[in-house]
Image (tube, rainbow, N blue to C red; front, side, top):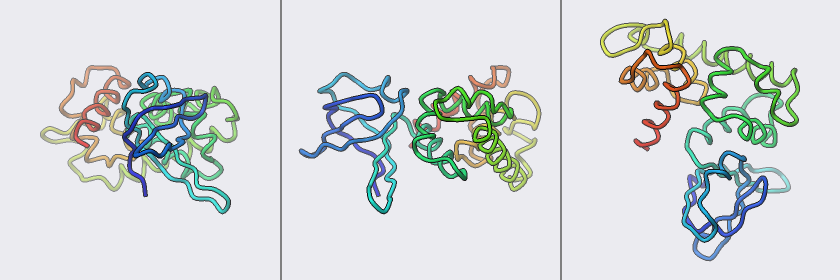
Length: 201
């Protein structure tokens, strides 16, 4: 329903920010990473949003980047992961760090987030790694080789796999990663790819 909000930042507290648009203040639940990225009060800002509809409430979530929003949606699609856990994880980790942890099977990294125990962290990693494997299997044959496409080995392939965790298709991720220096660390490739994808939106 709401894709984004652009307006004046009028209030922040741990866990949420209020953006005034056309005289209406929208309370957006958010992460610590987004709160740190916001401008000073009274300045204009844009948040990418997700409306969560429940029987007794409408909760609006807002994020500084499209990547963080995609990550939140992906996390909350995992069985047993609610918005609170999603925000907690993304307050502890940037999208590229989360994607890398999931693609590497590092569930312990997720347990640093408040309220996320080992069992939930393992479920997140297992479900999302399965998703990556399925997407990779369905990807065009050219994804694992050919002109302009990174091979299935090395940092480039790890970055492509991690980007699929954030909701990008393997072919889109591969096309962007292929333009970067594959000798860069995987996390840097993910960060640069997210920046490039964000600038096209």
